Structure formats: structure tokens, C-alpha cells
Image (tube, rainbow, N blue to C red; front, side):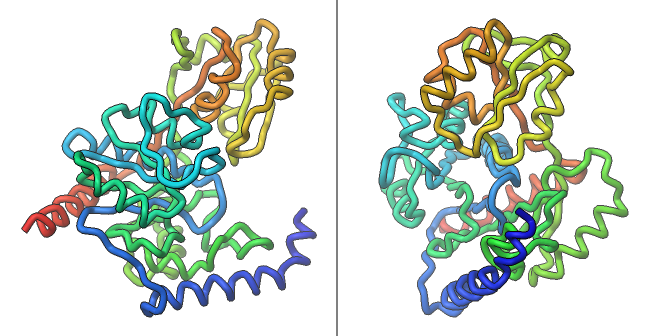
Length: 345
């Protein structure tokens, strides 16, 4: 695969050229970007998959939803519906997509919407009688048709965008220079004990691509100490030594397996955002027999509709800051309050 990616390097140059032209047209107003009279925070990345967008959106939701009416807007990747959809009690993962449905199940007091056309999605949300105070755009860093008020760029510790190449040679969806739009950069999936020296070294590398000298933060994936089914909770320590089946359909499942796996466990890996077919369900049942099945929270919202089992559990995760969490919170709240005040004058 690495060899194939290398010989496709000319296509990476072509793809980079095309995306650079597109960004140039937006930067100079030849293609129009639309702003809105509401705080809009875009969370995204330059690369494909696996940077931790979902736990970051959830962090922002927990931070802001106690004081403001929050809406999340995603494209609804691999959903079977079209156009603008606002989540309600009839929604499921097939209608919304797995991540938006996870938001809806986890945060019942917020509005969750999907629309591939983010401009239309925002307009639809603002036309509601109970319109939101703040909109969180999920995976919208490259969606230039909407000009967000605040951009958060995510990059994974083991796959920094500054060391990557354009598709198909690397994993970048646009060139590293796209980082100049970021108001904040978060290095996700960092070691919990990353030193201040290493943090400063990485900051210097990342800020070479950012004109704003954005704030750089470091987060790690924090796993829950419990697993959950629809009607039961177990301590992780209780199940770590028990034979079980681990199932994951996410971009980079290695840390999920490492956190739970014991010697006799079997792991089933599916593509990211996988729609589980009947043959998959049969395979899972055959391999599980009477074992506990543990999956990711994102997979659970899809699997639980098709695999009716008291032995099906999920492990929640959240994004936690290595340090300077209060600084992050203050910067987000200051942006929100400032823009709400401006727009209410």
C-alpha cells in the first residue's frame, strides 16, 4: 500500500493544485462564503478520518449547553435520507448517520440536524421558532461556502498534518496551508504524560502553517471506567479478564482494543461508519455465542437496532485536556459571549 501511494504522487500534486485553486477563489471572494448572525464554531481537520471530531463536539456541547441553546449540524455521512433533517423521536442512525444520532441520544436537550449543504442547514435552523443560540459545525473545515466565526482544527498526535501529504499519497484533503484558517489547533490522542518540552516543539511545527499564531492545545482520549447496555452497567475492571468479543467500525480502533482486550478475546474490525448487514450480525452472533460483546459508542447506535442482545455493551469515550483546559473554556466562552452581544445590539 505504501508503494502504491508513492507511485500515485503525481495525482497528489494534481489534487493539491485543484484544492488550492478552490481555496484561492474563496479567499479572494470569487466564490462566495456566507456568514450568519450567530456564533458558529466549525470543528474539523485537514486529513481523512480518525482525529476525534465526535468527542470534541461533545466536549463543546457539555461546555455550552447548560447556558445556551445548542445545535449541531453534520452532513450525516452514509445516512439513507437526503436534504435537511432535524432529529426527533422517530430518528435513527440510518436517517441521521451514526455520529449525529449519537449526539441526539446523548444530549436530548440540544437540536441535532444534518444537511450536506451546511448553508441551507444553518438557514433551516435559524428559521425554527426555537432557533439555536450557537451552531456547532461537525467536520466542516473544508466547507468554505459557510464562513464560521471560529475554526477549531484537529490533528492527531501520531499523524500531524504538518508531516502529511495530499491524497492519495498521504491523508490530507487539502494542503497544510489550510491550517492558516484555524483560530485554534488541538493535537488529539496525545499521551497523557506528554512533556511541556515536546508540546512546545510540536506547537512550533504546527504554527508554521498558521498565520494567526493560533492557540494550540493537547488532548487525549479518556475511556470510561464502565460499559453500558440498554439496561445494564458493568465496571471495565470486571470484564477485562472475561472472554469477550470486541467489535469496532471506526477509523483507528487500536486504542479501543488495547484498553479492553485480554489474551483470549476476539476482535472484529469493520470499515469506518459501517452499515452492519444481516451477514455481519450472523457472524457476530456466531463468534460471540454467550460472550459479552463490547463495541464503540458510535457502533452501538447502529448495532443495537439490529442485534437485540442483553450482552451488547458500548464503551464511552471523551476528550480530556492534558493541561490548560480552563484557558480553552474561556476562549470559547469569550468568543460566544462577544458575538452574541454584537448580534444582539
